[in-house]
Amino acid sequence: MTKYIFVTGGVVSGLGKGITAASLGRLLKARGLKVAAQKLDPYINVDPGTMSPYQHGEVYVTEDGAETDLDLGHYERFIDENLNQYSNLTTGKVYWNVLNKERKGEYLGSTVQVIPHVTNEIKEFGVSRRGKKTDADVVITEIGGTIGDIESQPFLEAVRQISLEIGKENSLFIHVTLVPYLSGSEEHKSKPTQHSVKELRGMGINPDIIVLRSDKPLEASIFEKISLFCNVKSDCVVENRTLSNLYEAPLMLEKSRFSDVVCRELNIDAPKPVLAEWEQMVRRIQNRTGEVHIGLVGKYVKLHDAYLSVVEAMNHAGYEMNTFVKVHWIDSEDITKDSVNNILKDLSGVIIPGGFGNRGIEGMILAAKYAREKQIPYLGICLGMQIAVIEFARNMLGLKDANSGEFDEQCKHKVIDFMPGQSEEVEKGGTLRLGSYPCSIKFGTKLESYYGKQTIHERHRHRYEFNNKYREKLTDAGLVISGTSPDNSLVEAIELQEHPFFTGVQFHPEFKSRPNQAHPLFRGFISAALKEQNYGNS
Image (cartoon, rainbow, N blue to C red; front, side, top):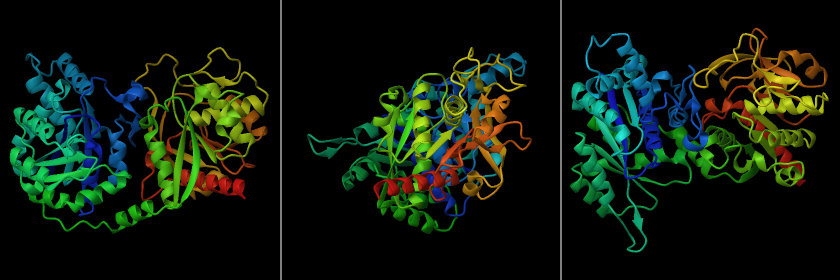
């Protein structure tokens, strides 16, 4: 029978529940178990697709096109398993399903209530079905928010019911909580954890394992006190200390026999985890000696989580190349004709990631022009590809008003636009081109040399496309269309041949990069940036 692990958090948000859940997934997979992971988010949005990156960070996209919480990126990178639409459930999605059922009369005239109708929907759609769909040995479920949040209560009640229904031997509750350090008294304090656990127990849930989040090493007395006052076994109190690199987390947790304890509590008979490859990767990360400076030009740079997967993908390439990737966060609104040279002059590479809306677009176009003219490696992702096309059309084709229909509906030369078959009368949510699509790579291109093959599958999240009306004119001017949809109707990638690295892709390669297997595009980009840096310093 599938075992269920529920991860909750207390005291404050941002404790790293997602990293704890992802690390446990990696440890259990290293024991030969099939692991599935999911996130239950209490916000009323149907999904994070329409939410501001400033509020929620990046939107992570799964293979089947679900727009999800960024924690799913951690799950995929740690566990190295593709997640799906059943991996993220929100309050909005729950109520959407419940209300649709009510309108269809599926409740047979019953008064629709939080218990049992909402909780049953959570149990069926968000939890039980996840185990059935994946045939997993273990399903790890993270509950978003913190204990005490009114929004999280239906989810907590649902998982409490699940634990009762499947039996305590098949369910486990892990509570991640903060242990603050008071410099005045020079000691850690356990009271916040005690109160958080008390709140959780008031909801009918007794944590089996408590993970203590701290910046400094914890003294033995803290473990003893929390074990006693929170009524958990002494070895079920586990330290999760702040680390310089998040990929060290599974190894640190395993020093406390984390996966041993989990397997014991769930009566799972599994061999010791095989972590040699992961340990080797961490040593490689710790022993890097090189350094390369990359400018990330975007509109949401004030919140670094808005570009989390992009930065991680660059780091993954850096791990393979013995290099620290130093990201320079550049607000595209700060780039003008007068400032562009000064802002970008010391960089060895420029990356423009995805985004929506017209704010800061002209600054991005100037950054792409600088990279093209100065022979600086450039990687454009989604919006970044569209920016490269607009810049090329303006300055190499002479179409001075070239733009995207998204930014200027009235411009004469919309080199990026809705394509035939798309409707302009679309709602914002769930109407994008989402999920994995095939791409045919043109033989002999640089893109082919990066991937080493001519057919790839990558994830998308966009509405506007390369306008085929300008395909011939742009290619005649020197723009290389290096990737298209298999039927050649959609442009998926562009590049410049006489440039060390100038590539734009309509898809999001960052979602498929892994810490122990860098994505080939990011590997090519960071490699080119290192060569540029070494050339510039020679």
